[in-house]
Amino acid sequence: MCTAVTYKTKDFYFGRTLDYDFSFGEEIVITPRNYEFNFRYMGSIDEHYAMIGMAHVDSNYPLYYDAVNEKGVCMAGLNFVGNAVYRDVAEHRSDNGAYLENVAQFEFIPWVLGKCASVSEARELLSRINLVGTPFSPKLPSAQLHWIVADSNEAVTVEAVESGLKIYDNPVGVLTNNPPFDMQLFQLNNYMRLSTGEPENHFSSKLSLEAYSRGMGAIGLPGDLSSASRFVRAVFTKMNSVSGDSEEESVNQFFHILGAVSQQRGCCETPDGKYEITIYTSCCNADKGIYYYTSYDNHRITAVDMHRENLDDNVLKRYKPVRGEQICRQNQPAKN
Image (cartoon, rainbow, N blue to C red; front, side):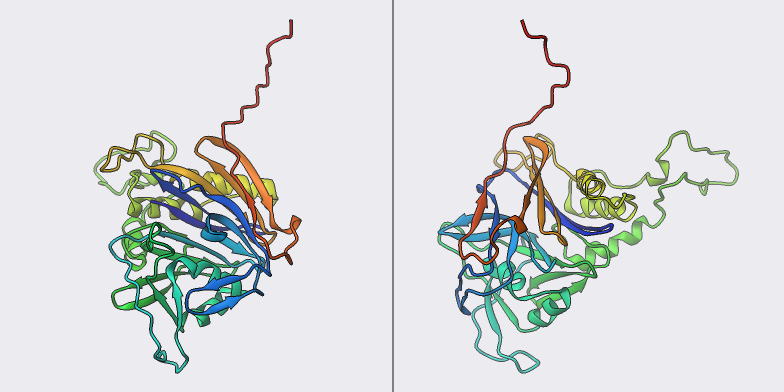
């Protein structure tokens, strides 16, 4: 289970947690403008926007979990098990008369980010996409996902379901897993009384009730690890978050926002006796193309700047995540 969030101070930030019980060997991957994407049904493209994100690379192909392109458009896929329905390859035209573009689920992120300089452009592209369930390979079947697509001006949620491809305005800039996004957004009505301030006594005018602790205005904010509860908690934390405009303050605050929904080993057991953990947390300055991340075993924030690479190259640039907790021992023992 995962959570994706947008955040804006002076710059625009986008990131997510990847919560799972094992790792696929993800890496920070920069795809330059001239890397050749060979799409299953849409031919080859060797000129596109550059992008950076977290991906599993197989056969020199970046299977992105989340990514940001050089124009500041961001995208992440999150589990949508039981609700995602992909189509068969189609040759007919869409409702607006354009030929459908058959895009496999695993190539959805590079297809959108390689072509679109804004969410507005992505909306137009999505109007003619036929999202198909072709797997990347026999060992990597199609993942059941839904996606958030965002820029500094707006965000949308994209869901391929039984009734077709749904595109929802996402006014909160947050996405978790099930249930479908419209249901998640509606449940926020149940929490409209939450507050960052002290609560008032509405229980009874006949009782003298007083707040005995700070933070009681948020009593009722769900604290469990379910996707529905994490959605509410992430929205409340993000929408009420206050940060300075500097890069350090903004990045720091972003990781604190996602820290509200992180998963600790032992708290979410899978049917086979394993535990889901927050394998990594990411934060990308979408305006500057700087990808920050932490991992479960390394809380130190590490950064990869896509603009320090040759973006006109045609070869993937890959960085393995820095592993192992890095502790600053301020009071070192005296040398003998």
